[in-house]
Length: 401
Image (tube, rainbow, N blue to C red; front, top):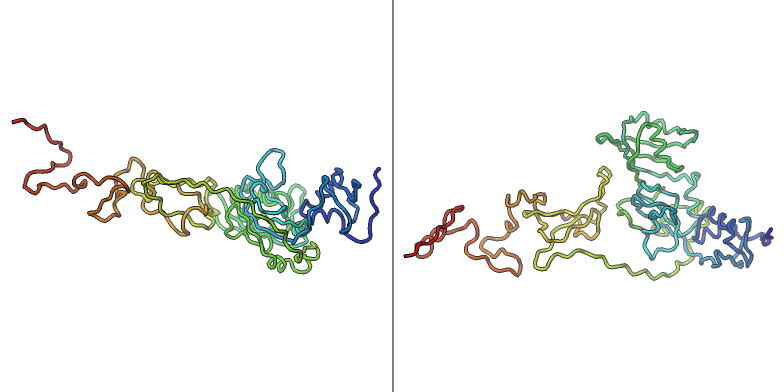
């Protein structure tokens, strides 16, 4: 049996030091030590029951711990379809695959199921992550829920006293029936424990089938209008004020150490479709704010297709998806009726209806129209001779003298 280095009276537990460095959680640190991945002063550890100080050398997989930096916290709008883990054995995409490249090593505060969306907190401090996950911290996690079935407010009020499902006791849950929409109901739930699949299991016991789950807030931090897939850092002063002295001391958060300088990774240029040369660019776009409403269907938004009378002429670039930041000024809407299909072409105002009469209305760079415009045929020419025929009738062959 490998003899452990002498435990020192001063310092901190090695698992806590590893977690604070942003490498892992305390539980993961203990697992890494048991797997023989951690050494202290040149000796491989077999137990996490060791305290270390700044003078000790700790290596993980042969590499020293990263330097500690200031405690930081980020809000991430997790989309559906991502798992909250570093590596997925099934090869599914993870939340870490979607984070910006210039973000430091971070870990999640708790987890969200693959089909759950909304606010997910990220931090570079394992001690802070552990404290915020504890039910004793008392931070309320609020969710918007869409579920299939019917229920009354009286039935939801019973959750305030706690609820047991299959022998598992869940703590008090604040539940409110917002509205009924077809065969679904919309609820707002608030809970402080956050056990695995707690919302779905409790509502299933009440006869509801959850088909959409969105975390709206975690303690004092709100999802707000943060677009799906984007990250926003919470200011250090705001974080320190919200934690207070008690939680700051319990987490061992550090707000004095300077942030390590990082050079942001260059972002790949966004490929935007271009309109063919010689045709006008599409007008309008979507708002820069989050476009998804909670009562929308879950199918993806499709690019708008303009008809002949719409503002998106044939051949113009398709507009982005809802919430896409590349889609024009906030509040802009496509002009005209874009719902006309091929069978309705020619009905209503055409593409040139908004152009002043008497001016050339062709395409940029095109040739001027030959003869009078359609619908404005003259009956007689300057000399009195007949110049045109009734619409729908073609002139016969000219007779030779």
